[in-house]
Amino acid sequence: MFSPNNIENIQECLNFISGKWELPEEKMGHITSPFTGQIIANTYRSKNATVNSAVLSASKSQQEWEKYSYRDRAAIFLNYRKWLIENLTELAKIISNECGKLPNEAKDGLLKGIEILDYAVSIQNLDQLGKMTVSKGVQCEYRREPLGVVAGITPSNFPAMVPMWMFPIAIMVGNSFIWKPSEKTAMTAYYLAQGFKEAGLPDGVLNVIQGDKETVDLLCDHENIKAIAFVGSTPVAKHVYTKATTSGKRALTLGGAKNHIFLMPDAINELAVEGILSSFTGCCGQRCMAASVLLAIGDTQKIIEDIIIKAKNFTPGKDIGALITKQSLQKVEKAISTASLNKEQILVDGRNPKVEKELSLGNWLNPTIIDYVLPESILAKEELFAPVLSIIRCKNIEEAMQIENANPYGNAASVFTTRGDIAEFVTLNARAGMIGINVGIPVPREPFSFGGINHSKFGHGDITSDGGLEFWSNRKKVTTKWFQIKNQNWMS
Ligand code: NAD
Image 1 (cartoon, helix red, strand yellow):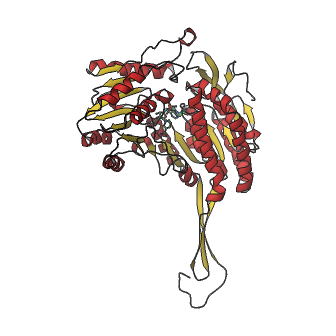
Image 2 (image 1 turned 180 degrees about the vertical axis):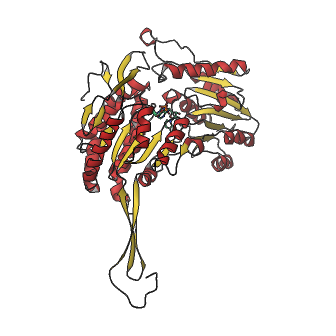
C-alpha cells in the first residue's frame, strides 16, 4: 500500500485539496500512540485561506461530478470497495495504531463503513422516488438533487467508520465533500482519501481539511457549504448545530451517550454475560453505543459474578485496546476514585494493569466494575468513554426505567431477558433511539438507519441509510402537463 511516509516514521497529517496533498498553515501538535506513548504524527490547523480554497475547488468539482450518472458513480465506488477489501488488514493496523483499538476491532469498524458504501451503491436501484398521474393529464414526480459542497466533522474513536457514515452517501448523490477528521486521530484520512482517488474519484470531490475547533468554526460559517454533519461529544454537537444552522445550513449533529442495560433475573446467562461484557469493554469502552450503566433488577447475582470472572482475565493489548489519550485515562481514573467516597464497591479495578515494558507509557485501563452506584453519582450520570460498568441495583423494572428515563442522552438501551412483555416494556418506554433485545451493542445493520434522540442527536433524521440520503439531497417536486383539457377544474 502507498504511504505518505513510512508508517514507522512520524506522519505529517496533510490536507487533501483538489486531489493534492498539502501542508496546512499552522503546526498544532502531535498524535501519540495510545499503546506506547510515542509520537507518531504531527498535526496541523487549516486557517481561513485554506478553507476558502478547499470550498472553491470542491465547488468547481461538484459542478462536473453532478453530471455523472448514478451508474458511473457506482462504478468508481465499486473500485473503491475492492481497494478497501484488498487493504483491509493494513488499514485496520493504521486505524488501530492511532486510536488504540485492537486491529480486529478496527477491521469491524471498517466493515461497517463498507456496509454504508454498499448502501450508497444501491441507491441507483433503490431510489425510485415517485411519479404519479395526479389528475387528468397532470403528473407529479420527485427528482433528487445534490446540495453542492457539504462537510463532515468526525470524532476520534472511529477514524474510518464514522466518516464512512457520511461521505459515501453524500458523494453518491452528487455532492462534493469536505471532511475534517479529529485532530486526535488524523492519520487514517490520508489512506481513505488516497484510496478513493486511486479508485477513480475525480479530484476535489472528496477533500480533507485538518484542524481543530478553529477550523470547525470556519466550516460552520462558510456561506458556500450547504450542509454539515457532525459526530462527537454533546457540548460540541450543540455548538456545531447552533453555529451551522445560524448561518443557514442544514445540520445533523450526533453527540455523546450514557447507555443503560436492563438485566432481568430470567436472562439467558451466556447471552447476557457475553453481551454485557463485550458491550462495555469493546473498543476499550470508547463507543457511543457502549453499555455504561447496568440496571440489575432483582436477583441477577450469578450473571454479575460470571461477568466479573471474565472481566478479571483481560490482558491489555490482547483482549482490550488502550484509551485514546493520556487525558482520557486521567479523567476516568479520577471518576473511578469517586467510588470510594460514595461507598460504592469496586468489584473489578482495572487501573494500572500490568503491561510489557514497551507498553508502559500507553493509556491502559482494564475492565472496571463498580457496584451499588447511586443514580446521582458521576459514575451513573457522566459519559466516561472507558471500559467502566456502573451497576445500579433496582427493585423492579419500573424503578430501572425511571433511572434510564432521567438520563439526558438517548443513543442506546438494551434489555437481557427471556420475557416478551419485559422486552416490549423496554422497547416502548426506554428513551433511546436504538434498542437491543439480548443484544449489547444495538447498532442497526443497513438499511436500518443509525441515530439516537435527545442529547445524543441534534437535528432531524438519521445519519445513515435513507436518513443520509434525505439529509444530503433535496427533493425537487415537478408537476407536468402536456395538453389542455376542456372543462378542467383547478386541480386538473
Ligand atoms: P469531540 O467532541 O472532542 O471532537 C469531535 C470533533 O469536534 C473533532 O473533529 C474536533 O476537532 C471537533 N471539536 C472539538 N472541540 C470543538 C469545539 N470546541 N468547537 C468546534 N469543534 C470542536 O469528540 P471526540 O472526543 O473526538 O469523540 C468522542 C465523543 O464522540 C464521545 O462523546 C462519543 O460518544 C461521541 N460519539 C458519538 C457517536 C454517535 O453516533 N452519537 C459516535 C461516535 C462518537
